[in-house]
Length: 119
Image (cartoon, rainbow, N blue to C red; front, side, top):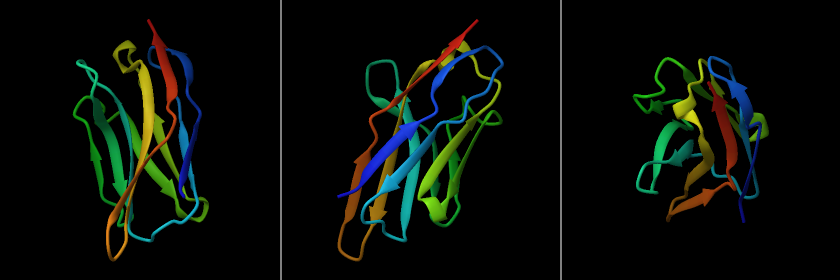
């Protein structure tokens, strides 16, 4: 019912910047949370950044001060501005959306976008 389409990954030198985006389409609920995850050692995904429909944000300690998450509600799109990139930021970044209805919570994942940072 809802699809998340990611774009904007790529390859950059250490210290460079990227700004991947994630556009949601389908049945969108006004109360929601969207974020970015990447694989952690041991294979499970870890939170990079998230933002709620109320504007609250959460960042992993490793990206605080370097990454900024934002949304364009008119376009149902979330962005991740990544500055001062480090080789250890290299990963597949996955967009996640959580929608809250009056009855249940819905979860969706994007296909992932590759971010590679060279030394």
